[in-house]
Amino acid sequence: MDPLDAGLHKVAAPLYQHALAERDALNEKLLQRGKDLDRAGFAAQVKVTARSTLLFRMDDGGRQVITANTEKFHAGEEAWPREQLVHLTHTEPEKFSPNALFPARGAGLSVAHRGVHCGAAEILILLSQKWCTGIFSERCR
Image (cartoon, rainbow, N blue to C red; front, side, top):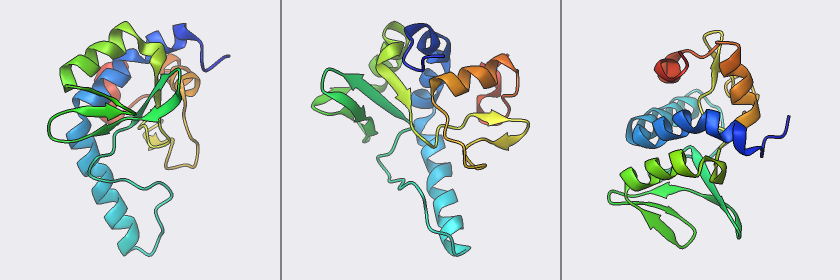
Protein backbone atom coordinates (compact mmCIF):
# COMPACT_ATOMS: atom_id res chain seq x y z
CA MET A 1 0.00 0.00 0.00
CA ASP A 2 1.39 3.40 -0.99
CA PRO A 3 0.79 6.01 1.76
CA LEU A 4 1.10 8.76 -0.87
CA ASP A 5 -1.77 7.34 -2.93
CA ALA A 6 -4.34 10.09 -3.54
CA GLY A 7 -7.18 7.61 -3.00
CA LEU A 8 -6.00 6.90 0.53
CA HIS A 9 -5.98 10.58 1.32
CA LYS A 10 -9.55 10.94 -0.01
CA VAL A 11 -10.70 8.34 2.50
CA ALA A 12 -8.74 10.06 5.29
CA ALA A 13 -10.04 13.54 4.36
CA PRO A 14 -12.90 13.53 6.93
CA LEU A 15 -10.33 12.85 9.67
CA TYR A 16 -8.13 15.69 8.42
CA GLN A 17 -11.17 17.98 8.38
CA HIS A 18 -12.08 17.00 11.92
CA ALA A 19 -8.49 17.54 13.12
CA LEU A 20 -8.60 21.11 11.79
CA ALA A 21 -12.17 21.88 12.86
CA GLU A 22 -11.45 20.63 16.40
CA ARG A 23 -7.86 21.85 16.52
CA ASP A 24 -8.27 24.07 19.60
CA ALA A 25 -9.79 21.32 21.77
CA LEU A 26 -7.33 18.70 20.51
CA ASN A 27 -4.38 21.00 21.14
CA GLU A 28 -5.57 21.74 24.68
CA LYS A 29 -5.69 18.00 25.40
CA LEU A 30 -2.23 17.46 23.92
CA LEU A 31 -0.75 20.34 25.92
CA GLN A 32 -2.30 18.96 29.10
CA ARG A 33 -1.01 15.47 28.32
CA GLY A 34 2.50 16.92 27.91
CA LYS A 35 2.24 18.57 31.34
CA ASP A 36 0.97 15.31 32.86
CA LEU A 37 3.88 13.36 31.34
CA ASP A 38 6.36 15.96 32.57
CA ARG A 39 4.95 15.78 36.13
CA ALA A 40 5.25 11.99 35.98
CA GLY A 41 8.94 12.30 35.08
CA PHE A 42 8.73 11.48 31.37
CA ALA A 43 10.20 13.56 28.58
CA ALA A 44 7.92 14.54 25.71
CA GLN A 45 8.79 12.70 22.50
CA VAL A 46 7.06 15.30 20.33
CA LYS A 47 7.01 18.99 21.23
CA VAL A 48 3.49 20.43 21.32
CA THR A 49 3.09 24.20 21.43
CA ALA A 50 0.15 26.58 21.52
CA ARG A 51 0.48 26.81 17.70
CA SER A 52 0.59 23.06 16.99
CA THR A 53 -1.79 21.15 14.74
CA LEU A 54 -1.92 17.47 13.85
CA LEU A 55 -1.30 17.95 10.13
CA PHE A 56 1.30 18.76 7.52
CA ARG A 57 0.68 20.27 4.08
CA MET A 58 2.64 18.97 1.13
CA ASP A 59 3.58 21.19 -1.79
CA ASP A 60 6.38 21.56 -4.30
CA GLY A 61 8.69 22.71 -1.51
CA GLY A 62 8.11 19.53 0.51
CA ARG A 63 6.21 18.76 3.69
CA GLN A 64 5.37 21.86 5.74
CA VAL A 65 4.04 21.76 9.28
CA ILE A 66 0.65 23.47 9.64
CA THR A 67 0.57 25.86 12.59
CA ALA A 68 -2.25 27.98 13.96
CA ASN A 69 -2.78 31.30 15.62
CA THR A 70 -6.00 33.02 16.65
CA GLU A 71 -6.71 34.21 13.11
CA LYS A 72 -5.33 31.70 10.60
CA PHE A 73 -3.52 28.47 9.85
CA HIS A 74 -0.03 28.67 8.29
CA ALA A 75 2.22 26.33 6.31
CA GLY A 76 5.41 27.79 4.92
CA GLU A 77 4.56 31.15 3.36
CA GLU A 78 0.85 30.36 2.92
CA ALA A 79 -1.99 31.20 5.33
CA TRP A 80 -5.71 30.32 5.39
CA PRO A 81 -8.71 30.94 7.61
CA ARG A 82 -9.89 27.71 9.30
CA GLU A 83 -12.91 27.23 7.02
CA GLN A 84 -10.81 27.56 3.86
CA LEU A 85 -8.19 25.07 5.05
CA VAL A 86 -10.90 22.60 6.10
CA HIS A 87 -12.37 22.96 2.59
CA LEU A 88 -8.94 22.28 1.04
CA THR A 89 -8.75 18.96 2.89
CA HIS A 90 -11.88 18.03 0.94
CA THR A 91 -10.75 19.32 -2.47
CA GLU A 92 -7.01 18.50 -2.16
CA PRO A 93 -6.70 15.75 0.47
CA GLU A 94 -3.50 14.41 -1.11
CA LYS A 95 -1.75 17.61 -0.02
CA PHE A 96 -2.23 16.78 3.68
CA SER A 97 -0.63 14.23 5.95
CA PRO A 98 -0.95 13.53 9.68
CA ASN A 99 1.82 14.00 12.22
CA ALA A 100 2.94 11.40 14.78
CA LEU A 101 0.36 12.53 17.34
CA PHE A 102 -2.63 12.16 15.03
CA PRO A 103 -5.11 10.34 17.29
CA ALA A 104 -5.78 7.17 15.35
CA ARG A 105 -7.28 4.83 17.91
CA GLY A 106 -7.67 1.11 17.95
CA ALA A 107 -9.35 -1.26 20.39
CA GLY A 108 -9.81 1.57 22.89
CA LEU A 109 -6.06 2.32 23.05
CA SER A 110 -4.28 5.15 21.35
CA VAL A 111 -2.05 3.76 18.63
CA ALA A 112 0.40 6.63 19.12
CA HIS A 113 0.46 5.85 22.86
CA ARG A 114 1.56 2.30 22.01
CA GLY A 115 4.56 3.71 20.12
CA VAL A 116 3.20 3.25 16.60
CA HIS A 117 3.20 6.32 14.37
CA CYS A 118 0.27 6.37 11.95
CA GLY A 119 0.29 7.76 8.47
CA ALA A 120 -2.59 7.80 6.00
CA ALA A 121 -2.21 4.11 5.14
CA GLU A 122 -2.22 2.99 8.77
CA ILE A 123 -5.21 5.18 9.56
CA LEU A 124 -7.12 3.65 6.67
CA ILE A 125 -6.30 0.14 7.85
CA LEU A 126 -7.67 1.00 11.29
CA LEU A 127 -10.77 2.54 9.74
CA SER A 128 -11.39 -0.49 7.57
CA GLN A 129 -11.16 -2.73 10.62
CA LYS A 130 -13.64 -0.50 12.49
CA TRP A 131 -11.26 -0.08 15.41
CA CYS A 132 -11.66 3.68 15.74
CA THR A 133 -12.89 4.94 19.08
CA GLY A 134 -12.71 8.10 21.11
CA ILE A 135 -12.49 11.56 19.65
CA PHE A 136 -12.77 10.44 16.00
CA SER A 137 -15.48 7.82 16.56
CA GLU A 138 -18.25 9.76 14.83
CA ARG A 139 -16.05 9.94 11.70
CA CYS A 140 -15.42 6.18 11.68
CA ARG A 141 -18.97 4.86 11.33
